[in-house]
Image (tube, each protein chain N blue to C red):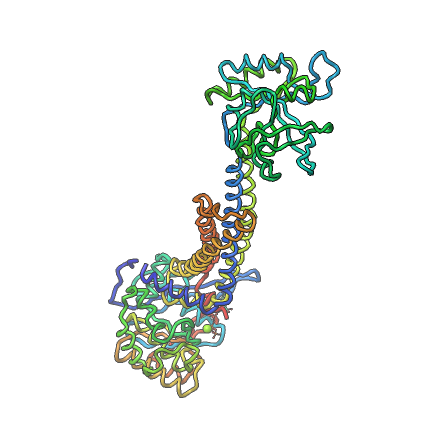
Length: 391
Length: 234
Ligand SMILES: Nc1ncnc2c1ncn2[C@@H]1O[C@H](COP(=O)(O)OP(=O)(O)OP(=O)(O)O)[C@@H](O)[C@H]1O
Ligand SMILES: [Mg+2]
């Protein structure tokens, strides 16, 4: 086609002549691109921060008593525990992977003059070095002393040697070790907790069974095998225990966040559709106003495809300029949103976050092109005589 | 886009048994009925007749903007019915020049750009500016007006630009629909003198619709039509 840039410059001139209208259409695209990109960035930053704060150990299986199971013959029990028989069966199912039975509860504690509520774990001292890392002090030896989570220590100015009073009877214990911060976990959450020895816990709370058992798979590949073996051993007749592995939970959480991100981006997409409609509107107005001009162009030898290209250029210019500006603004908007809502802009500079900007821009360009197609086709298919007669 | 070979001997335009019928819900409108005519190279023809008699319809067909319902129209030996839309468009661009009552310049372009437009369509962006200036000078538009937009020009000046635009690709045939209809008598006479000169000095074939008898006097031949039929030829 001769003179492609002729039609480009005609498109530019027409947009300039109706600059206000063109500007409004471009602003629509800018907002749409910004909405999509910044929603994408926010969603991505959000799921990044969640996965970062999770202690992403994907090698554990957690077994808890099934809610509603009444512990066989014993009719005294009101809450569910894992019996010694069940622990034994779990150990057998785990074969050469280690099993850690755990007591877990919560109680009122008193630190100096403050009374607060904390989780309390009872764990066999010889299991502790495998399960938890230490930050300060030492691991439990025998029944005396407790270890505390990093957050509990920090928030209450507790250190090695501090005294804590536990429960109604205010039994005093002394802090011998402070644990390393671990993040949210699906097995145990020691950051805000007190860890005692299993013996102390059992005596103090007079409990009959464990609250959960953690199995650290010797090999990740064994996880499925162990899970099904536990199900077979314990849940054959009646569901006695619930079994889940931490990787599965991690996956479903990231999946959920992916869906939330998609949803918020879809909301951004709606604003882009609105922008597309406004471009469509601008282009249709441009075609209708220029009926006569199109007739002139056709009568003096402009081909259909050439008329079409002129209008497609218009849509393309609106889309490209709107998307370019939108892309730049998206970065600013993304920065603002992440800084305000997450208080940590480093999530913005992650490639998975930044890629949302070109995504948004691509959507903007495609939307403008699609909205320009029909008006362009309409313009090119006008009958020259009818168009010429139009006033 | 290549066009079928044209014949340069014989008539530049030929109508044989041409009718144009517009099918409307209220009944068919016969705009042209069984028109046969020939236009020879270098002729200056005026088409006259009352309003609604079919003059513009006839001229549109000569301009390859419309196809007949019945009969055949040949432009320089080619039946326009046999041409594709793109071929018809190329024929308008390269071999026909249009001059309208409303001037019909492109409002976005200045005078020089309007003249250059068909040349760019044909030759691309390298189309010569000198050629446009030459044609503008030939139709008598002073250089100070070359960069004015159509809205900044008088009717006579706009019509000169339109004539320059029609001439720039050096077509054999000029088609004019009431070229002086929107001009005062004096300006109209100047435009007519220009057309006459193009016909006699440059050998252009000119076909002009008018209902002003004084304008028709410039023509060698007058075709009178009424109710879509040729009434008489003078
Ligand atoms: N697109 C159309 N649809 C229906 N009828 C049409 C159409 N175009 C023209 N006509 C009819 O054809 C007839 C001839 O119209 P045409 O425009 O050729 O007249 P004209 O001689 O040029 O008139 P004027 O001097 O007023 O310009 C008229 O009766 C008109 O109503
Ligand atoms: Mg007419």
